[in-house]
Structure formats: C-alpha cells, structure tokens
Image (cartoon, rainbow, N blue to C red; front, side):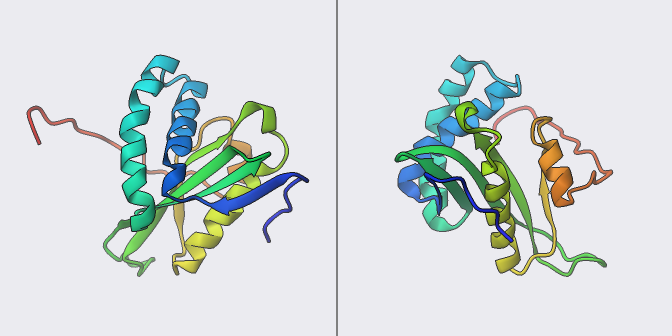
Length: 164
C-alpha cells in the first residue's frame, strides 16, 4: 500500500521536460553523500540532463517525482537491465532503483517512502520479482523497513585503458 503524502504534496511520473530537475537532484544526492563537490556535480548536470531527455520518453529510465507548490522537491528512478534467467529467477530483466533524493527542507515527511512504493509498484507491474539499489547511509533505515537486504556480492569494476 502506498502511504499518503502530506497535504500540499503530489506524486507524479517524470517526463522528458523533468530531465534537468532530475539531473540536479542526482548531483545534489552525490554532494550530500560526499562523493562530489557542488562544482563537480554541476559539471555533470548537462550530460545527465541530455541522457534523461532521451531515456525518459524511450522508457529506459522511469522516474517518479514529488512536487510541492509547483516545485519538484523529491524524486526516484527505476531502470530495467537485461539479464540472463537464473535457476531462482526466470526474468530476462532486472530492476535497479536509483537517484533517490528529497530536498532537505522536505525530509522526514514520508516522501521517500511514497516514492519507493511508486518505484516498487512499477517494478511489480513489469512482472519482476526482485529489485536492487545502492543504499546511501541516510536511506538505509527506509530500505531495511521495506525489506531490502544485503546481497552478499560486492560489485567489482575494471577500467580499461584507451578509447571504447
């Protein structure tokens, strides 16, 4: 069940014109986690905005936003990625939640939980049984409450030299 939002707040799907607002929230999310400075985040916003403008209408990225007074104050996204079916999960796609952000002045009002319920409803509507996310410390209590658990498989990365 999706929790009710406080008065004056409205949850809605994101559209291509929301790309810049989502990119700014993504940047602020990384700043809040200490992963980027304000200048670094701002430098990435144009690239993220361009990508989101194409990804939203194509269905590559599905976003949900909360507005208050006509301003976007919170958001979350879901991306579906191809996967090979496994013995325990026959799905050919996997869902990943990303870009969870609530503006500081609007935190502790249930917005993140409402956004997560919208994202999880979307994943269910796609017929998927599992979803992943990378939890920032601030969001961990919510994710724990929703039933997310540690996967036990840390991600490893290799950066290749030279052009792609």
